[in-house]
Amino acid sequence: MLKFDFENSLAFLGDNNVFNYIEENEETLKQLFSEKKEDKEQFFGWFNVEKWKTQELIVKMKQKSQEICEKADVFVLIGVGGSNNGARSLIKALAKESKVEVLYAGNNLSSNAICELLDKLKGKSVYMNIIAKNFETLEPGLSFRILRRFMWEQYGDDIAERVIVTGTEGSPLHRLADENGYMFLPFPKDIGGRFSVLSPVGLFPSAAAGIDIEEILYGAMEMERELKGISFRANPAVIYAVIRHLLEERGFAMEFLSFFEPDLEYFSKWWVQLFAESEGKNHKGLYPVACSFSEDLHSVGQYIQSGKRNLAELFLHVENVAKNYRVHPDIKITDGFDYLDYMEVKMINDIAFRATVQAHTSGSVPCNIITVSKLTPYYFGQLFYFFQFTCYISGMFNAVNPFDQPGVEAYKSEMFKLLKKYD
Ligand code: PA5
Image (tube, protein in one colour):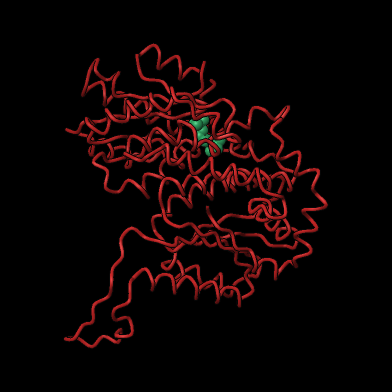
């Protein structure tokens, strides 16, 4: 199970403040944990992992993904925001040796990017998965149109077996899939994009890249059981949400997710989206920032250590790595690094991690630490569920709806006016 160490934040906030807040808000917490969600029903599909773990759906996803693993050179994932961040974070970390190359489209409007993608697809066996909850989003809509044309040119009528559509049941995208014989997977109606990684949205592309999706779900379910079965005072998601809330009340403005394994880079993008889009409302919310250490210690690290004192940090520490390397002595060249002789690179990285926590703490940054044993589908499942749960509670403490994103509509309506969509 993932571990959450918050001792350092208690030193900033005072133990009493954190645990008193939990006691004072016990009734609210009971409601937040209640399985009955009344009017908010449409947002809570993620709350019970089991709900979307039907055998039928798993079998359907596994069968198609097996075909992809056998026949495809390239799998193109078309989607943006919650429709691709979860799967991409898993694939980038866990499927580096996959035989099927996963490429991404529909997450920008760059002409260069789409042309480069088309060039890469030439002569390859291509499958693609378009994922959109609301099939009005411009980026995936545009890319899907361009890539469909490419696929028609390559495969003619055989295109049908190579296109997988993940959308809302009954939506225009669902109709489009049915009319053209594309395989359809449900984007749960009761789950918003950034909470959807444990549904077919995150699972199917991961399976296509060869990742064990049942392990992801198993990890998430264990996390769910832990969070729902433990007292509020001992509950890591509750404590973390309360700490975030109290820090914000005391004027903290930013939270950094800092990690020392580059494999977490895309996971950190998922995390940034989750908290930014869920909590950045009504002029509230900690601004989430991702930091890939030790690289970013040589840039942003300066600010964390000595800039404005309004930031907190959450370290995501990985205890074990799949591949380790021991430094060999160099008897021929004197380079000043002999103190590293025989050390494992993992150990050096761990020392950098511990030193950074120490330095940032003494620079008056509240540092919390989440530790996972290793980066596997199981632990990703735990992390996804843990952060979704925390974000939900934290948003509620801030009196914002963590599940909508009205602010995102502003740029869209300006853009659609300029594109004369409704003329
Ligand atoms: O979290 C969200 O709801 C958003 O980030 C959406 O996932 C994103 O805007 C993409 O939406 P759609 O799947 O409708 O294209």
